[in-house]
Image 1 (tube, helix red, strand yellow):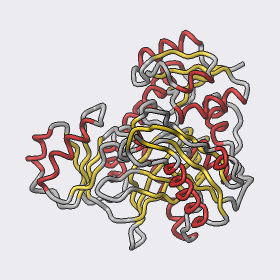
Image 2 (image 1 turned 180 degrees about the vertical axis):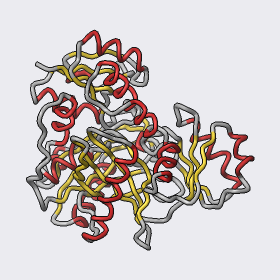
Image 3 (image 1 turned 180 degrees about the horizontal axis):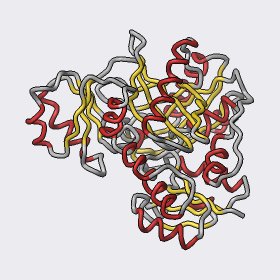
Length: 398
């Protein structure tokens, strides 16, 4: 029985832990949270911060693993590549992952390879550095942590007076304390999920995204039907494939966000060398395509045969993050009728009595997810929003 190590054992990683168990593999997990939900599904686990490469490597050696992966989090990407390189396992190179984990280096690499042409972008690791570049900055810009995840610390800035404060908040959300300032591009945001096998890029899904209103940009949901015409979809697939090759990603899952302007120009917004979060990899892709996405991720890391053939062609799936009304939870109403609805695939509720619900500004403020199907994108997205609102109504606050 082969042993697969999963770096990260939170809610979104628990789905791939369970899938590995279903496929008959021995699961070994690490997470910095001793109460990580994924631990209860794992065969073996240890409380280790997933960015602690050496400690994770020691545990991997001790457990004599056959493969290593992460899912739905950027924080485990470097650790996975480090373990894979040290133990001679399948994975992307550490050097490649170092670039992907730094949004500035990604932007620089894509510019140097003529893949993307964002007019201006700067990296700073000291607030005072702003004074050196402020005369060159053309507003609006968007500020991001260079190694952030889950939309934390991202904000549009229209005036120089607000730039330093935004950079300070972005640094607080960054492990490296580095910030990317780049030209703001107006457009519709889409998500693209891909898989690399034998250096060939396979596009699994192009998804509509629902975002919060500016100046904060955080995901609220996805829909498996892009709504785009075949020409622009072909251009997206070409650009995504070119991006993946320029960055040197050789194996496994890739999650990309991109913008399409009113002039139909395509710009890469973000990239992760891992399965998408917010139930993209665990729910949207398999439910809308029939592809065993998580199974393929696991098997790819173990050098076993994979199957990327699509078996479902017309099912529209939409998700909605539970961005709920702020307050302290007094009581949670019965949700069984919602969960048993014909078009509801999953309702994930992450709040309990006496929990504090924060104003939604990033994924960390989300209280769960709803996953639904619909005859078309509008029906699916409307259903997801309606159910989100009904869940919100059934949660009583003090």
